Image (cartoon, rainbow, N blue to C red; front, side, top):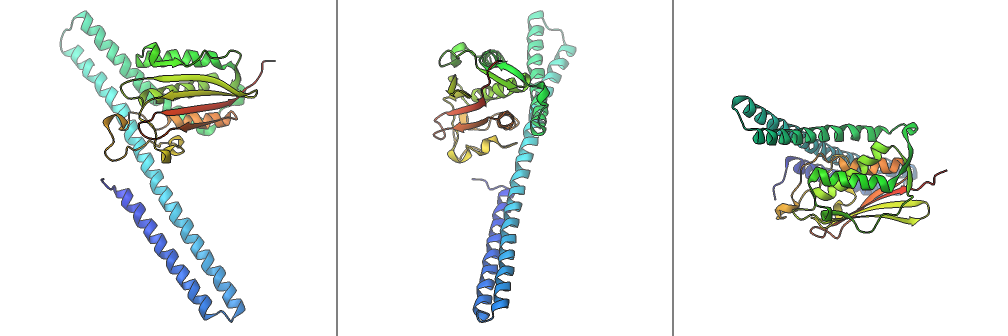
Length: 306
């Protein structure tokens, strides 16, 4: 397995921190042995060395977190650059072809269709970045309104099918969604959250898409959107990390091609959890591990129409 420069840096700082803590502990023990009969110097020495040890531990943790955060940001920048550069290069290529030579009407329409898809991809990337910024800073509660959640999920599910050219059986409801499920939220923001869950399941389902969507009411005041896929799955250690900003699951060594990282910015699930918590709910994931599919649950408080 290839060890990155940042991986070496993390290992170095952990080793250095551990050595310094061990040295401080050794000095502390020596101080206690040498001054065990002297009350005030003994107590002051223990406190002093305790502060040093705590400072070293905190400093090491901070450095490691900063290195990992910078690595996620670099990964995000690389992903966004690719997501922007690829469709732009594609659009430019087709425009140059249209300018350089005559093409028949059928081919021209095909080129236009491809360029529109690339433009939608560009717009989707830009919107994802903008919505991540909005999610961090919150939204005005004055824009919140009562929304028929079942209707919103059905509409978004149909949109996801169209965007990814899926057959109805590839992305479907497990059971008919119950009616009368109302939430208080910003409609556009909530639609983005639901679409991100569908989009994530589609991207990580491999070649064969089999995604089941359910709406449940575990109690009178709560509703849940459950999205199950039979895709590449998630390692147990990654289940909490995948909702962090810029975070993308890294495949294990020797993982099959289907489980390799897919295109994206690493912001979709971050938006899902951030918005859900602002509405008083939450989002979490479940998986038995790589190759066993994933289940994502969006939990929101239910409201009743006046």
